[in-house]
Image 1 (spheres, one colour):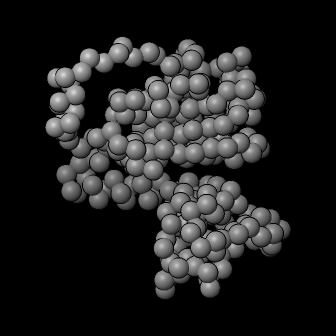
Image 2 (tube, rainbow, N blue to C red; image 1 turned 30 degrees about the vertical axis):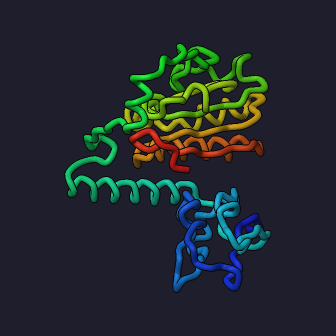
Image 3 (cartoon, rainbow, N blue to C red; image 1 turned 60 degrees about the vertical axis):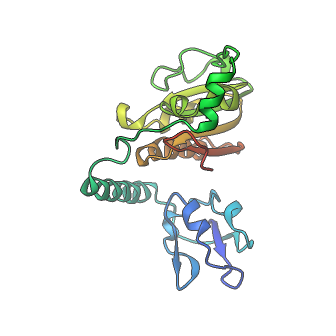
Length: 241
């Protein structure tokens, strides 16, 4: 079939690997120091890899290519996640539940002792906020900037309300605890309402990849072109990207 797919100019490619990291479908590998599209049926033509290429080596083209195989992509992603989990199990447990303790910096300790903080204001714009409980159509979605956040982010990142929730409709979930695929419901929310943008905030732990994939699948399946971004929070409360 003729469809849109990425093209990698090997002469421009410097082998940095950023495109391979950005390709959540796993279509790109680094071979002999160059990025190569190794699995054409994994490439969805969505272009996550394009803005990450520092040399402009990646473009779109229309050509004969196998159809995008979402089932094969999901199977490969699940296998990769399982392999990661098994590695960490052999090292002493699931990475998402590994015990860690964080110590306040000297600067934070000084601030706690010397300053009185203003009372925080909730920026939650609607109720309910759990993805499982939300309707797929509601007045609060119209013209909204949608925040899709993992449950733990609000606890790990101290300024979640001001930096991410303010001015947005917030929907939250945890694919590991809920053990469901949010893709269908998020697709209906984006497709059936006037959503202006989507921000995905996830934790760095592997299980949070399920939430990100569900949101990306929903954006793709909605048939709409909406500005979107992914922000990853570390377990000690830092923004990683």
